Amino acid sequence: MKYLLMTIFWLMSFVACGGQSQGTEGTDTTDKHVVNVPQFNTDSAFYFVKAQVDFGPRIMNSTAHDDCGDYLAAKLEQYGAKVYNQRADLPSYEGKMLKARNIIGAFNPEAKRRIALFAHWDSRPWADNDPDPSKHYTPILGANDGASGVGVLLEVARILQQQPTTVGIDIILLDAEDMGNHRDSGLSDEKSWCLGSQYWARTPHVEGYNARFGILLDMVGGANARFQYEYYSEQYARDINRKVWKAAKTIGYDNYFVAEGGGGATDDHLFINQIAHIPTIDIIPTSQQYTFFEHWHTVKDDMDAITVPTLKAVGQTLLQVIYNER
Image 1 (tube, rainbow, N blue to C red):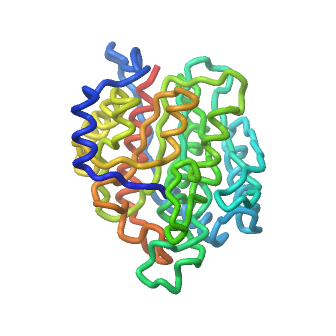
Image 2 (image 1 turned 180 degrees about the horizontal axis):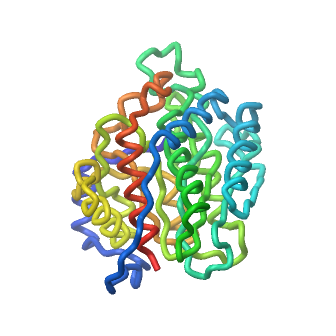
Image 3 (image 1 turned 45 degrees about the vertical axis):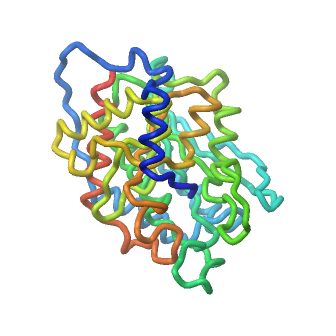
């Protein structure tokens, strides 16, 4: 995925723009109320990650991609969501037509107050960050980069069926995120990434769709992950960052959710903020310079890259946020 901006650039830019958020007023609940937040089942989330990886690389226009998409849509439907399959032909930076499919599961679809939860479900067609140049055109399994976020959201969907929230929840699985230009192409075009989110932001699954805020999960299963305030999230949705990081601290996960500035990622949330104007943050490990985690865009992004404690920290924090929203 994308580009990771240096932390020092984040700090300079944040000071320059005054650290102001946009469009996030009124998102905090100030009155006290007791909420029974369910427990996040990490075994279930791990199973959902593995189920995706077992299809093989979920690269565009492949059988594995189509079969995994059917599986994801069926799971959301099984857990009681109203499912939308948003299909579109989207051109890649190479001019190749991609058969993209955004999959949306709406819980409590009649509710006006809504929260959008995002992850991308495709995987990178090239291991172009692999230390072995001979593998730079090998498709990756994308266990952490893609499947981890989706696995967390499928477990959230399972829980929502058992214990509904008072607000509407939309689980939005975005396609064609990882089709951005190959590192050997010599190109640098941020709009070659995140094609599914760009399409959804312009033509949402429901006409006039809006949400109080959005949370994007990306690479949320890696060992020793540290989630800092991502640069663009601070630009567009600072209050939501604070809401989520406060929730993590409340339940003892501030060792994962570190309340300090990290780098920036050209990720799905950027286009959701810019085009759909829904204040959306990105939970993504941006603490490493120029990369996201050890096996990012390499052939080793497989199930060995997934660790249960990180899935738990992210999943439980997400539940803490959505079940306390009214």
